[in-house]
Image (cartoon, rainbow, N blue to C red):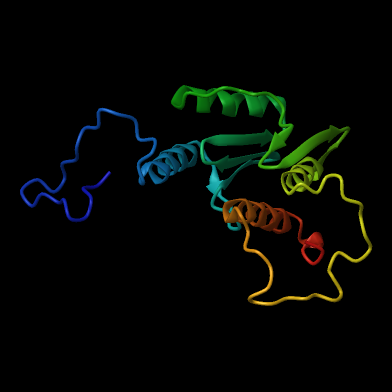
Length: 186
């Protein structure tokens, strides 16, 4: 922690305030949590992935473990049950944690386990978007775009609730980030 800009004490530049409340809600809390977590797991042997700062990898011989951190949710997968339990024990000794069991749904992605693989699907997330848009009773069509649009700056009524439109647009944007194959259709 550092003294915030504009509130630096020149006599005691290394002093910080003792907070009487938790860090939740403060601007620096996500960064402080991430740094604390990243520092600890680097001590126990994890390294950052080159492709994603939220992904940490542990390799020892043929053993492999991945940790994905999203805000305060952690997904942990390991090449063996013993390694999984060992990592969970180390993490639990440092952080207050709760094991929610096998992953089934995370960030709009459903996870189904099969013999030797995982099946990831966003069917439920896409269905929720369609329902929020009030389109669940609509029939499908081969052409999703009006082929003869009548667009005008002055014609038509403005949206009653632009927040709803923005929310749906953001949800569709997330869907296309994780499913690039449907980007054109969306």
